[in-house]
Length: 200
Length: 200
Image 1 (cartoon, one colour):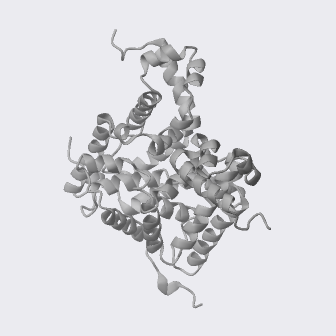
Image 2 (tube, rainbow over the protein chains, first blue to last red):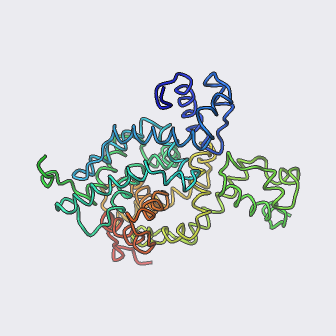
């Protein structure tokens, strides 16, 4: 049996680890809590995953793959891509926390894992292609386009002050309104140009 | 002596705590490491600060106050404000990490501290005033303006993938270029309008 094939213990560990990392981050996560919650032992857990960092990397990569499959990234319609990214995380706070912690706590070597870099490279290539086809202003560096769209899409999720603002009646926290603002901002920066999409 | 007056032990604890929280976050920080680094005891530390959370709240509030004094926020020139915010954090990674961790780990009650809410309210009021004076498109919710400018300014700092991208030659990591992209994005969304500023 290949180690990547389904294994009930391994699957339970991954699920428990996702909850533990989302709640406490990498530094705050406890392997013994994960093992207990997955109804296994630390020894059996370490037979599947070398270290807490390696377990986090697995869980994070699953989340990133799920995000990419669910959200998709369309360089010819960046406002719609941003809206879908907003929706994804607005209804998946655990996933948002999970990945946010990695940004602070993952080692550069793990952040540079080939699978991660390949995903980034794919989006950059799509943006460059869309620029070549006249769909995105070519004066933008592709990497900046990617970073801006992602950050704008997540701008309210990253800001717990939204709850404070709502409590102080500074801002209506209605998700629909925040989503509309995100899409409007991306549309102003990068108007959609589906007509520039090459015929399949 | 008022408890807020300068006290060498208290000052050393705050400085050590800033380093510890920037490196490890709230959950990962260890009070005994902070006490040791500040050359004091845990008991003396707890005489000054009730809890790890309260110590973090103090350190974070100092950082926010320093940020506000250094960066300033000018609703009549949001691109320039974003550029200054970029500069502040680009040269203060500890401050960036410190505040980022709070977003994930601080309790809602602490994030709702009156001093924090007052700072937010002040920025919102400035934006609303600038909208009333025709300097910012009034169709934006003031809170969204604040959130967008802040997130865009920090878009490269929040993304360790920039290092990966640089390593793969996907993107030149030159800070000046990244700063220019940030200012350009904010300028497209919220063009500066210093002429709309009311006479002092």
